[in-house]
View 1 (cartoon, helix red, strand yellow):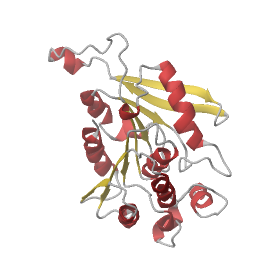
View 2 (cartoon, one colour):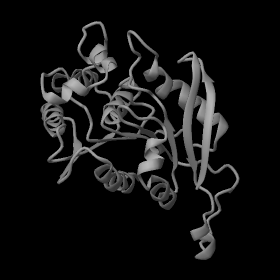
View 3 (cartoon, helix red, strand yellow):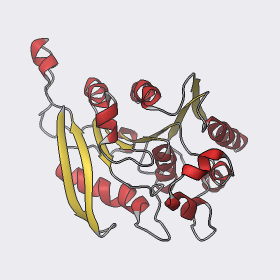
View 4 (cartoon, one colour):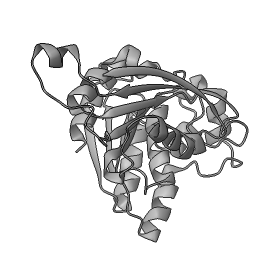
Length: 260
């Protein structure tokens, strides 16, 4: 797997953007095991997963704390990991336009730079915690772009994020600005999901997983119930676990195996 540390000036953000990119290539294991895969076949384009970090993190998190590089190599998919600060992956009322960046500018730029498929059925978005919210928000912003969307321990229910539970005290101030104010539009995922159901939108295939001991588990239960009431099918997996990298490292592998 080629590991590429990329930065470029983003017109959506009006500043330099930092992205980690994985592109499948011949590995040492391929070489030693005599695995013959033509990664450089003419016109070959790789299925691509946009993988989003959680709060307080950046584009390095998934590569530092998980084996996602190995899992993606085994699957033969490219992985794009952008930095998005504590933005909730939104076009923030008081901040940068990260939703536009991730769903429009980033795919356009990456597909010009790397051999990435632009087919809907080969374009995926996934993330953890804040990035789980972000993955679903991106999928609802551009359902025609993504064929598959996965959330791990996602912050999926706005009412939970606005609550007075102890977890709320440690949320970044930008979260409060995004989910606690009526100034910020397009925040409630259940409402956006309902709008798509009314329109008859073809949604991406949806997957979510959460640890049953995770403080954010009730948030996942609530969102899943709302989605089910709307008739939206989601593959929902519950496992023992908390809000940590042991859980995400294990279950991002499940996500990758779930992809076609």
